[in-house]
Image (cartoon, rainbow, N blue to C red; front, top):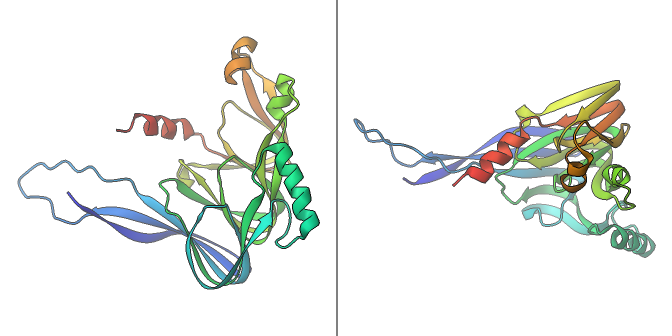
Amino acid sequence: MEFRLHPEVIHTAEAAGARLEVTEYDPRPTERPLEGFHQPLVRPARWRQLAVQLGGGLAVLEPGALQYLRGEIEMQATASGGAAGGGLGGLLRGAVTAAATGEGLFKTAYRGTGVIYTEPTRLHLLLGELRGEDLIVDDGAFVACVGQVTVGRHVNRGLAAALGSGEGRVQPKLSGEGVFALQSPVPPEEFQVLDLQGETLKVDGNLVLAYTGGLAFSVEKSTRSLLGSGRTGEGYVQVYRGTGRVWLAPTLPLHVQSSLTAP
């Protein structure tokens, strides 16, 4: 049976001079089912696409995220951790840091009036707001941000410190005020945004998509064996202490398992 993709805007978020829209493409059969017959229907997966509406504002996208744009919009490569057009000195400093950490140097900045469309994805797109703070994002989750937001890097040394290693894990860091889009196999409605007030959160597994920079992060041993933890990561828990927000996906293992068993 043939299907057609029907678009529908399912989520929106706004910042000064910009707007994010998530469009979901729902596959629907082109023919009516035959009456009097049992006809099993296997629908293709839904696709999602992000539209960035710019009204003179600024947007930053992950490299490779752009599919097309229309309007009077200028594109510029920007060194990670600095503003667009930061100068040769900023680019050289960024290049040295990127070489040391292994992180890619450039993001892509867009400024002007028009609309930007990202590549369609089967992952879910989660929209959130940044309130004059830092947001540490999981690897590969960042898609785009708009408003007064700087995209930089954060070196997470939690597990490295626990294992006695000097190297840390490099993650995107968003700073400022605006709205952002992250991607995940987990639908937005299944996330728990936990507002910690001087509390401690311990998580067994990589279930956190993002957390605000005011939280102190560490990795601590759990009751599991140290031998197993040294090889697989088991035996440690991720610990978040202080005041801030955490985007937690309790159902992530279910989605990962279903994707592995899908035909």
